[in-house]
Length: 115
Image (cartoon, one colour):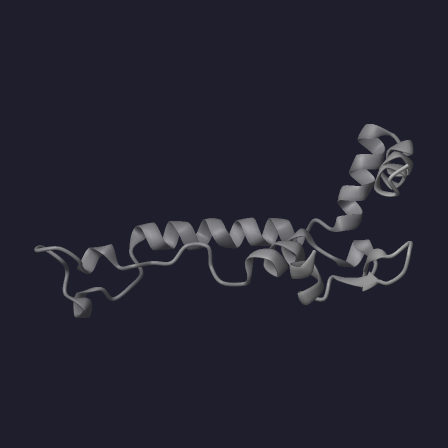
């Protein structure tokens, strides 16, 4: 929750019934926003230019473009991030409600309240 708070997605509420609330409507917070708040915005794949290592390594001046592995990983990451950016917390809440019943949220709230 601290990472989500630092990322500006939630804020804490003080007091007996305190906790956390979203800083904007659930349909305006993407899953990508959550991932980036927790994991950071840096790429998941970091190319280490394996082509240039070892006794038969390719000289840096010959590596004019990214290697095929880096290209594949960057393409996959872009697709993954684009996909997560299209799904919101509101979408997930709607899916839970439609697949588990609207009373699910009441049950969750009751459980969180410790009753």
